[in-house]
Image 1 (tube, helix red, strand yellow):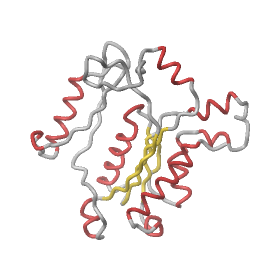
Image 2: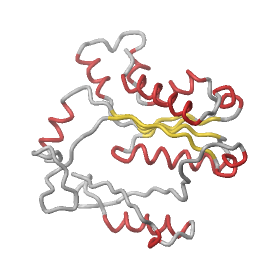
Image 3: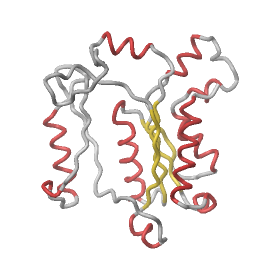
Length: 227
């Protein structure tokens, strides 16, 4: 009855902990938070089709909220634990939430994960009818040939700590998060249409918050929406 996303997230988070060389006992001794970006609930839909929603573990097995809670429960972690669903931005918003909890002292370490598994073709059909998916199965972001996006599956996890704590503890540091933030596009021609001005404003605010000169950024990864 368990959504594959729960099992996959649990496994990948464990791999991230191993890679960080942190001991689970140490994570248990402090407030360790779990923040998971997840927005697809295909497995629950399959349960309804199979009429298995009345099974004893069906409720927790298909709930998106439990993806994060499953991790906290398995590793006996006591910090904040919740799933984030903001559609395409879920995983990055989970990173933002983790950073805020670290800076506020709500947790000493944060496990952040994003997982996406498609178990039902219904979503593909609906998005195709809405004209969101590429008819050719290719992505041509910022190009005149752009005709939609391509859905993808996967899972990733990272371990975050305050920089001063990581340096004090001699942890391996792969990267430093300089700034995070979120906003909303507000009213646009359609609910799913992006608002370039609002997105530019957010990026400017993030740079200003930490005194970062935008011209010093040498790599930018974008989300070319197909909606």
